Length: 98
Image (tube, rainbow, N blue to C red; front, side):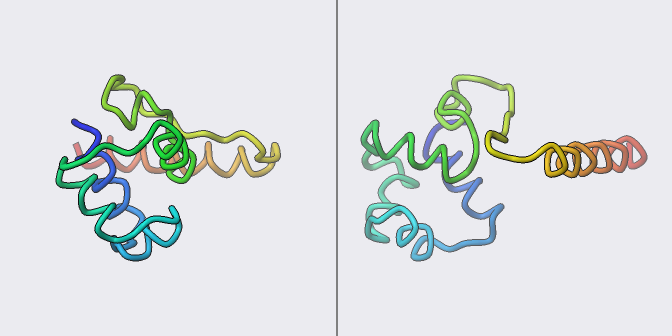
């Protein structure tokens, strides 16, 4: 997947529209639309900001890595345990469906 597709996919997965995402990034809705339509690329600084917002690596955002990661820096051990539990539960549900 390309950067533009990844931005759109991550944004819609969070349930936010282009206007809301633009506000959070400090840009216009037109800028977000241009990124998602592959008309322009975000600056390196903005790319990092977008990756941090979605808690993904820049490699993942750029489509350079198939490995999906989330950034969990700053979470307490208890919060990390909750994240692990959610991932485990979702993985188990997927296995049951297949």
